[in-house]
Length: 380
Image (tube, rainbow, N blue to C red; front, top):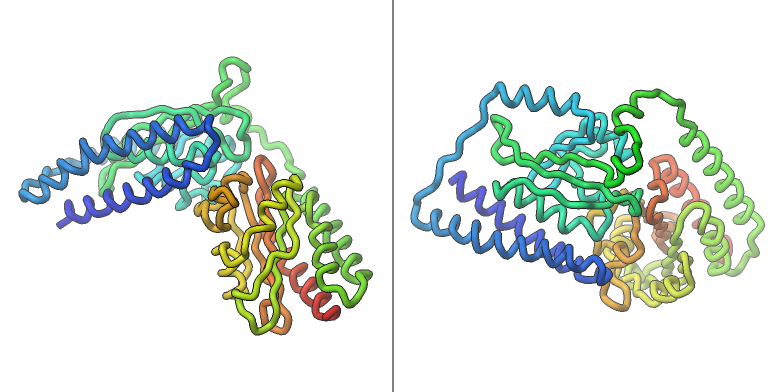
């Protein structure tokens, strides 16, 4: 029975990876060879592993698996904690199990936040499908692998990822050990991440972001208090202009009327990095955006850092996922409610190497959305 369940999990995991590869077809031509290699790996996996496995299950001849020695597990933990290079332990779905200190410094992600989240969420969209396929192949016991990837926060810097299989005792499945190394580490002569991270230098980033957020709230409040009454669309457009650029790379406003529900939403404002991108997204119907519909239906704000679902905001006119094409690294989706009734949705994107939205910024946008709703109600 255990082998049957494991086969079912493996088959379901394969189906999910195929869905990722289908979504990756919309990437630029330069990234397609990597996607093609990943697709070939998956086909080989079906022919060499899944089908023989199915035949063994059908005949009732199940191989018995051996567990590693407990002492090796303790040794692995000790090496893992003290290893000077960035190291992560992930499962066969690339979900982070452990992250050593050097890896937290290298990726800029706290270990507590990363644990339980896919490691692919920290990579550029073009590398996610290939990395996940290679991690799955290593977890299946098909040998160690290595590939070049790019962190989403630093897409221009190549990172070489080495993947090796380990089997701690007591674990039902093989774990994948991932070692990350900057592609230009030797050429630049830069010290290893662990050596520089030992220096405790005061970081004023949070204080600076807080001061900028207070300036933004002050400007937004001033705009809402001085906005002309009687023109709801003008108020929302001016509010979007305050947020665009300094706070978010994309600002999308979808509005409706009371009693119409999600079917009555229409896209009224889109501010993007370029006019062409804004026009393309303005033509999209809000009803084709699952995230917008969910926010309008529940009346609850949504904060996503490195969105895992590329289809969460629908597709552009060419059929490519909007979040992939815009290289969205974090997003905020907040409802515009009047007396408990949602009459619009405000969506904000941050892209590329820009810092992700924080919980404090999400809370501030929740307050801003309520103030916008009050201003809109006053103009109605």
